[in-house]
Amino acid sequence: VFSVAFIGKMNKELAKVIGIRYDDNVLQLRKKQSLRAAEILGIKESRYLDFEDETLEENLLSCTITIERLIKEIKPQIIFTHHRGDANQDHRGVFKACIVACRHYRDSSFSSIYCYETLSTTEQTPNYLEFAFLPNYYINIESVLEMKIEAMK
Image (cartoon, rainbow, N blue to C red; front, top):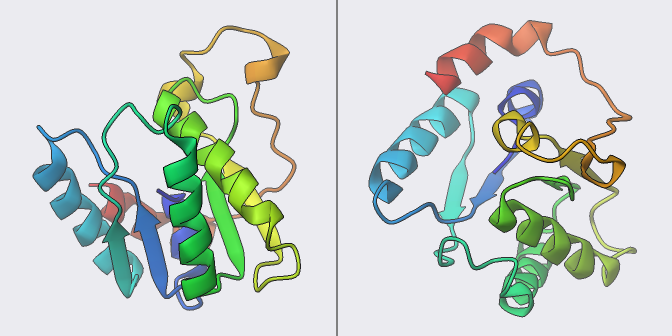
């Protein structure tokens, strides 16, 4: 689950994208849509980890172990995850698991961990600082905006 804009900007360097499972009722549709978007963006591989919907925040150990295994296997240079104030409990679970998994690999292949905002869930949070998304890194996506729009269709 990554920022489509940033993937479009970096598609030449990206080789793999990892995604978490969607609700069973829409899994096939969402998977088809995400694979089509990945194709447009030049993503070479997508994986679906098949975690149960709405359980990731409760099942941090399993999610963390999976992320640790993937870090060892894939050796990413940059890791993207949701920000901690997301209203979606699975998004928060992925954030927590990523942070825990990444602390063991500070001398690993990746140089940065970036958190991104999912507008549809961030805007549902209470207006408290602990939920605020406070970005400190911006990327001009003008050169890939049309590709992003096409991928989001």
